[in-house]
Image (cartoon, rainbow, N blue to C red; front, top):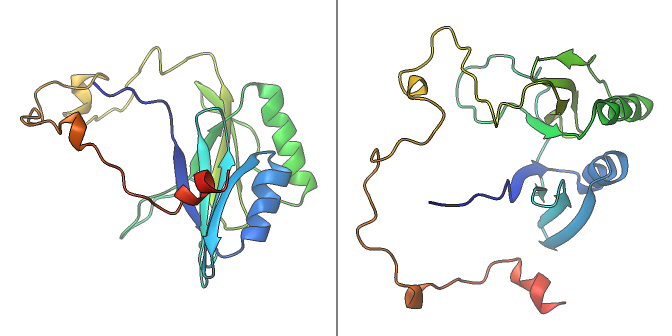
Length: 191
């Protein structure tokens, strides 16, 4: 069984790294912990928590997304609706709301979703962001299915189902484990 530690990084895109740094580092308070790049390409990483990073690629010609309301239905090819970032307390949520409004960003009212309280905003790339503080129910410890018409697989429960996929018949021997250098290798070389 694999042990997951969180989201190593969620990679988003921007056409304006300066505005992205100003928002994510200077307004939201995320540390800028790594930067890779060469002409026509940048890849910067912001620390969200001890285990989670948010990264941005900057490529020429990237334009902000079409402004879309969080959770509004769409049609056609689509993969990403919004990013929800957890905050520790309700006070953190209200402090973020005040900071975003003071900086001139639209921010929703605080929404009580039962298991979390949330505010919604957009970054300079029009990426939809939700900030969520814990509510009275921890759905990680106490999963709930309130869908009135759940899929058949959802009815099987929250735990991964065994024997759905083929077992690994020939695991890669450890002596064959090899990694090939990527762009981030320069971070180690320059340390």
